[in-house]
Length: 492
Image 1 (cartoon, rainbow, N blue to C red):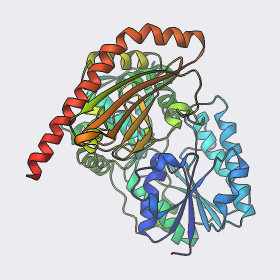
Image 2 (cartoon, helix red, strand yellow; image 1 turned 180 degrees about the horizontal axis):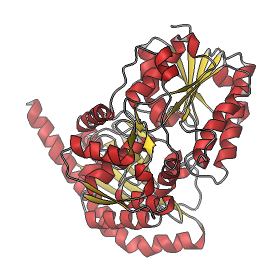
Image 3 (cartoon, one colour; image 1 turned 180 degrees about the vertical axis):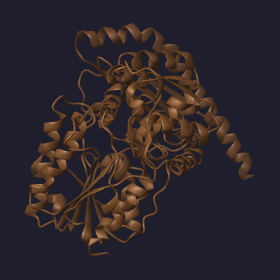
């Protein structure tokens, strides 16, 4: 397979991030196309792939990605961010497919969504179908897989089900909870995507894929409850609209309303798959039941082995705008605190990259939670995204209401705020060697205000920053010194 160069888009997303290592294992020569290569930092497979930076909305960046490519995976779509997302999706697909055509790419593999084209599809599902059509208009053979709910650790649909079921023992159930769907384990979906490359009969086909079970969302929640031994009761209340339901989902789960709403609107359509063609082309793929898929996802979560999460994608919180980066900002306000810590830089680093998630923010927990609650009440991300792994971070992933913008092993962590703010905010931790084996530990909060309201916001909160941020660096310093002592004792 070494001479078969494969291009993958959407690499920082849920599916793309899992597809890369599996294609490498199969022996394919993999190139990834990303807007910001720094967001791949920390991926175990990074040194094994060719990375090209670009943007499907900037056609001039595409030729470099297409050179020498045999097949390309198109795993890009919008869930939120722009009112004209459907048109932007079509423009992106057209740019991509025309560039692929110009550089003699032999085929495109696309993952779209289930749904009867003749029915009253939601806007997002209709856009997924139109994207497939637009890709085909280039003349390049397209294998379009159409899938419904993906079930796996970190998938947005699984996280909705997991948090709703875990947190609400008696749930008022709107109409969409009783719509039939056919969820598919992420392992099965990846198997189809990969095996399509070695199945020439799949070329130029639309292939519907689904798991072993046809279920409603109610069935999914009750099955999850069964696996977890949770007694649960669902009471039908059909008057709740998708909009109201999305706010409820945002309140209970990590999924913000602007992402939950298109998912819920899509559930007004039955999304069951005619798997006849899939079974004919890929008879060797054993489909997991929903219960099996849930059990595997929970095993991954329990073992802290979540490869990718729905929140990895910037689209999940910002639309598809280019992320703001700290460097080069004018009019920056900041608070800087320094401590000399009697511990090595590595132990200080290990301490500050472990904050957030289940471990929390160490001091003034009530204040951090209050700020997160206020954010979620106005449509922000709140705290519920947590973190992928309790001790590991990588650039680009979500951490509570932050995004890991920069990560330098043993030295630096910079978080960019994704709560709703009248400006842009960052929180940075840096560990540098100091004399006598100690560490200069620097913690800096940056804020780039947007207009007068931004300035008023900063100065209104300024009195609270002193105790909160001072106690945070003090606690981190103390914990690092304890870690260092423990490490030295273990070595002796």
